[in-house]
Image 1 (cartoon, rainbow, N blue to C red):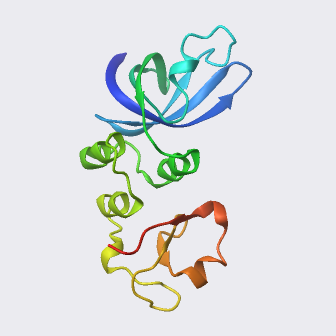
Image 2 (cartoon, rainbow, N blue to C red):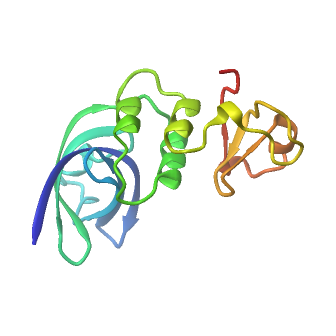
Length: 167
């Protein structure tokens, strides 16, 4: 059984059974991980307040039959909406640290243009896949494509990120 300690941003939490929770974390050392926390949904849980989406925490976890969160201590929060955190949890690959993205998220100047560029989808030279328009305004997460305002309006709203295309 291996034990790890790292800083993490809580991206998402989901119920698991009656009392447990499954958390999607973006960690400084390990990238995106999914971890289970036993009894984190109990009213008396000391772990739950430190594992809300948007919180930056020092976490301790072990790998035994999957990844299990053992401990967490809140150290701050990121200034992103729940929607942005959800989109990040969908975009990030598993177990690939992104130091530049970590710095962007924990800093004060988060933009989707910068985040997408770090992750390999640089909007600077992008075009709308439907019409070829330069400087698209939207990124469609499930298709990993850029769209202009006209064509993005036809996409599902919960799968499209509005970006500032004026670089």
